[in-house]
Length: 137
Image 1: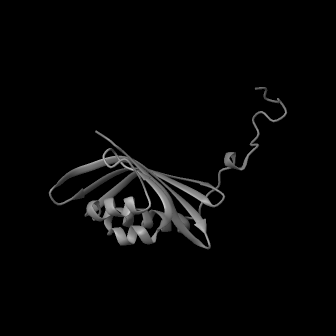
Image 2: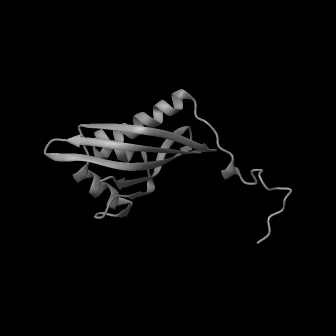
Image 3: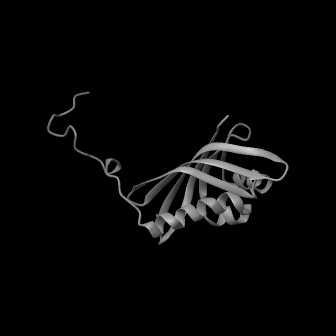
């Protein structure tokens, strides 16, 4: 494959153009993400698209559709979550949140993970379209 020197160094695709979110928009997304951890599965479902994909450490692994809600009904309700090393990336109507999570609830060891959630801004609302967790040991 040959790369033209005329286009080298310049964004050729929309994906190369990053944008920003207003502080208010960032606050909305971070609040949604925190509630994803600390609320029940019904709250998570209300802020997640119906065709979302979630990747959790095995098991359960890769989940989509109703599999997500079965898993979350049994595994939500963390008492607290601390999200450190927060980053937000935006490209048009997509925002990606990345962070280091430390979550705790009664009778469970503190759970630490690297996380990423992708949101789509559609019809004036943000919906989670993917979420991924990698356990930190």
